[in-house]
Picture (spheres, rainbow, N blue to C red):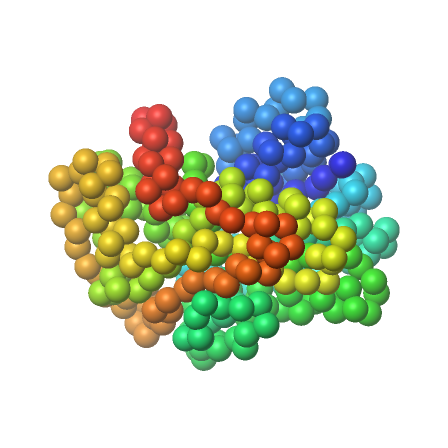
Length: 321
């Protein structure tokens, strides 16, 4: 295949590019490096099947040419991380909605398949867990910037499914749940790399809120091993899939596990949400997916547990030093 990855210099995009090149596909990447990094793809530059463009997907001429050259598009370009979303809501909304809109428009001209990377955030404040793909969304007030990301990604899903139903564009939507692994940065609020760096540097390990909120974490290579088969499955077109781990851990327990594995003397400190983000910040107590749909379609079964994920991130940051 000839594959276009928007946001391909990002954490997930670079791993996807690496995997596709490893099996012989030709890979085109576009990234404006707003949250991605050349460091993530520098090792791929010598591969003659790898091509990268440093530009925004808002450059319509460049995007149109790349879409035209490829057979399938993995659309990963988006604003990422709670910290960035809270601090830059305008950029979040414009990047997510307009970026997806133009990708779908150009893909539709030649009916190129599009895999849309969505997010577990679309479930919002729902307490019906584990989350199923057909569950209702329960979102907070528009006065809370925290929910702009969830709303913008929900619009992305609505738009993609509208292109499928009305225009016959082949689309597959994957809702990613806390994907983690080497190359992920804590710069934008990602919890595991943030806590690992704190532990390795013997700084206080910061837990927001009371630490009883739970999350499920999935190793990036397990995620890649699911979304590629979903892309290639003919019956996955027009469908939405949860892609994540169904095993939960509280953030408090996560912090202690990272402290132990990093053999760190760091103390664990609790920071109120209002101090960490902004007054009135809202969070979800639990976020865990029902992954039976992806399991039934492509046999998805995450193989790396939370201990293995933490070990991989610790090793990555130790190597970087």
